[in-house]
Amino acid sequence: MPDPARAAALAAALALACATPGRNPGTTAPPGLEVPVEYHVLDNGLKVVLSRDGTAPRVAVGVYYGIGFRVEPKDRTGFAHLFEHMMFQGSANLGKMEFIRLVQANGGTLNGSTRFDFTNYYEVVPRNVLETVLWAEADRMRGLAVTAENLENQQGVVMNEVKVNVLDQPYGGFPWLDLPQAANVNWYNAHNFYGALDDLKAATLDDVRGFFRTYYAPNDAAVAIVGDFEPAQALAWVRKYFGPLPSAPQPPRPDVSEPRQDEEKRAERTDPLAERPALAVAWHVPPRGTPEHAAHVLLDQLVVQGRDSALHRKLVLEKGLTGEVQGGINYGLGNPWNYQGPMLEMAYLFHDRDRSADEILAAIDEAIQPFLDGPVDAATLARAKVKARSYLYGELEDFYGFGLADLLAAHALFYGDPARVNAIDDALEAVTPALLQATAREWLRRTNRTVFVVRPKA
Image (tube, rainbow, N blue to C red; front, side, top):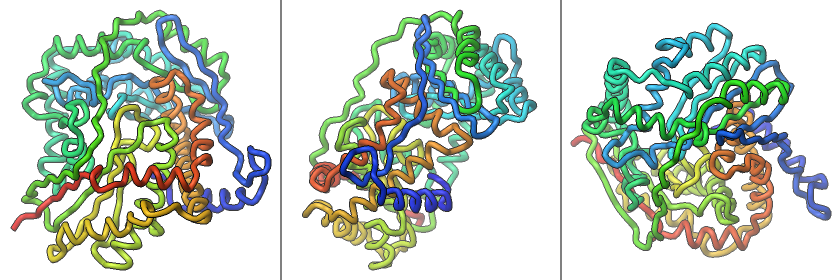
């Protein structure tokens, strides 16, 4: 989420902007996004996105691979995450952990993550280090150090991470790991993507080498560069270091679609480490890129996000059922725009033992019902659009340009069209009260809801 102070400033600026003529003659909408985007595809299939911004002498580089935990092998849960760790274990010209030391010694920072539809690696460095970073990223795309020692070491690291963050943690995996498994029916969307310990132990060198050859090829990757650089020079460096790498045949992608949910689902687990009960709800959301998806982003702002949201007003201020409600679309693993397959809207809370799940769900229904009963008024819709734009702009500015690189790389990887980032704002502005109500009726209905309860120790 964006910094609250920055988000408030952006919201105030957007509110003022609404009073001036915008991009559509005769309307009062603020100007839309105009992110500079230069897009290329190399002969080996690598997608390259360049977006220059000379505001500060730094550059963000994101290398994205089209393999997330959604489509990892069925008998190797957690494999995509395990492989993310393997990518820091050395390559053809850089030994174990030398990639990290190289970036940090040059005044930069770096990390990687595994998400539903991609695995990414990124660096934010001074502008004079750009060529070095591109060389280093190409070096590990060219040849990862896949050894028995490295594999065994990282299996231990990842299994320990699962234990620390999930198995030995109060409310571990709640709700971001629990809800997808309860709400979805397609295995690709519904498995334990952090990894079952037995599956992590079972990974072999052949598994790792085959995974690398297939999914870490340039024709399954995108490179995004954002910041203070010369596009022609940056593209020349990308061609120099990534261009010679061979493409690889890609297997057919599995069907990850979800059927329409027609009955409410309920699931629960007992957590011996938890002190208080917890409750989470999830709704399937419309497909990315549709008008209904833009409408649901606005519903997220009106229903879930902030102290002015319907859930906060009803559950916290009016009924005192909890002290806070959190959640969102693609909650905990990204934002409403950097994924491709089916997704959930989540909302969750912790509550006292003398409050029942049914009491809380009844209050949630009360909070949502007005959005189903009739269209919102103009002021409410305008507020939702201001909040959504503030959130979007905060994401784009996040972490010195990495937020923009993230969305550009994701749109290049998923659609071959990173300039679609500039259409997000237009889609939000186009939402009408009628579309908002129709979207709420279909996607926030009770029969599209999954409820997950965590029960504490006795």
